[in-house]
Length: 194
Image: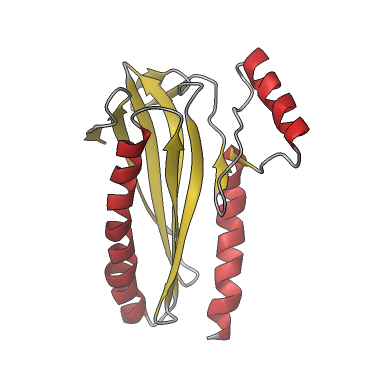
């Protein structure tokens, strides 16, 4: 059991380091925030930063052009604010899970997109509680499940968000699955998943 408590923080730290490249901490003071916002407006290749809500980490929206599924993406709308809402849990001391869900604001469609991710959380939790837990029991090991998102940008009036789930059993290589979701920037409607 002690091995699990030592292993889980190591995996969490590794994942945080690997996925943390696209995230930043909130500025310490309002002056720093206004300076950062001014820099963001004058240099479009700098990450956009906004103050996160309580208990939420900040997602930096990359302002450079990306390519997802062969499509060239423009930067996400400048008024779009995205923070992380971490959801953590433990399944019978055998499976620890942590899912970061995006919380959008700044656009009229934000509430609808947030509703989509709130609806996705039960599916992610069920995956940890059943699929990962049963596999861990079969392998007589502990497991960790992590979920993270990336705001990829926009294309043709659609916001593109990728979500990746990684399940690691003991010291094996993680099992990774990912999805890319497209949302209408006017209504927030979920248009498709790849």
